[in-house]
Length: 94
Image (cartoon, rainbow, N blue to C red):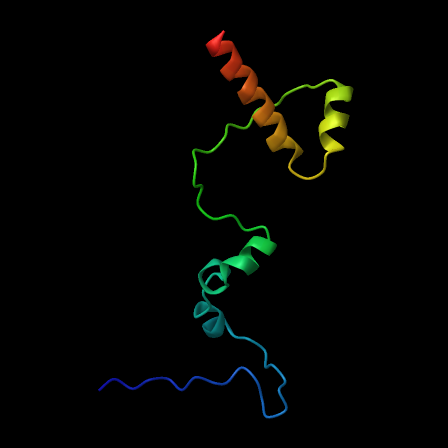
C-alpha cells in the first residue's frame, strides 16, 4: 500500500490560517467548479451561452439615441438589439 502524505490543516487551534504552500495551491479547484451558480452570477461569471452568441461590432449612434436608451437603465444594449430586430422583421415582411 502506498503511503499517503499527511495533509496539514489550513488553520491552527485559534482559527488562524497558516501560510499556503505551492502544494496547497495545486489542490485548489477553479471557483467555477466549486461556487454555486447564484454566486458566480453575482460575480459576473457567465455560463455557456444558451442562444447563439452575438457579434461584437463598433457602432456610432447619435447622442440622442444613446441618451434615450441609457436613460432606460441596465439592459439598454439589449433593448437597442430588440428594436433593430423588429425593424429587420418589418423590412422582411414589407
